[in-house]
Length: 355
Image (cartoon, rainbow, N blue to C red):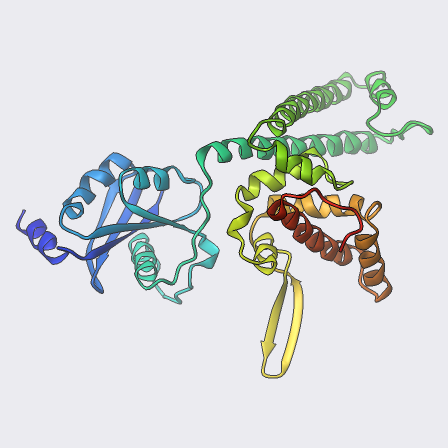
């Protein structure tokens, strides 16, 4: 009790910072105030327990600021702390300054976080509203099923190749004729037929799930929250339902990017740079930021260059200079992203061929 009284007296009318190292079952806390570590402790991973302990500082300190790394725990703690009247920062783990310590412990990690927060050295993760995050999970679920569908397609191809069964001429893969042919295949061993049937059942399941989720996303695109911006984006030939909704849901608020360069940096579409003295060398794109939107933009760029002469000319110019196709299409995707951003900011539909 005397110890807590001393702490309360020390933090009186001061700003208190708290770093949280989050684990599945427990949290490590480090409280920091006026350049000093006030307290380190381990708690059961519960918001109720955290709130109960922090109330010791809440009524005497000027304010309490929390920080934790983005990860498996998501943003629920951020929202709960803000609703309770505290300040909270979620920081990207890969942007936390590296301390080359010989010893690494959970308490040291919490102390490192809170020290960097108090000195203004941490980047912040943008936390979208819960409604927007919930809508975004639809797209990510669809992508998850899409990956599973691709995997089972490859498994079916491998199964056929393993036993020397070629695809008949004149039948394209994954058409109705191709699936009918697969269903009618006869194997010498019944277990081989059974394995293929299991693969086909999984294939159909993932197709059905993707179709159902796509239907929900299409309904979402027509809602009042997204319809206006969605219409502006799909005015660009090559931008379809999934890319347009990925653009809107992964970004949520496009105005938070003050400049196009900042936006491209968020997408990870800017080149990395290695400079020393007078030597400047540009490398591959950074691949930082949002991988879901970056992937969607690069995939759409291959289609957009067939319809937009401005972007098609840029792609051709880069190829003429000797840039390989993948690097050239990434550059096109970067330009496409900037143009789509401008459409939303100006509240105007995409215009083909306008630079």
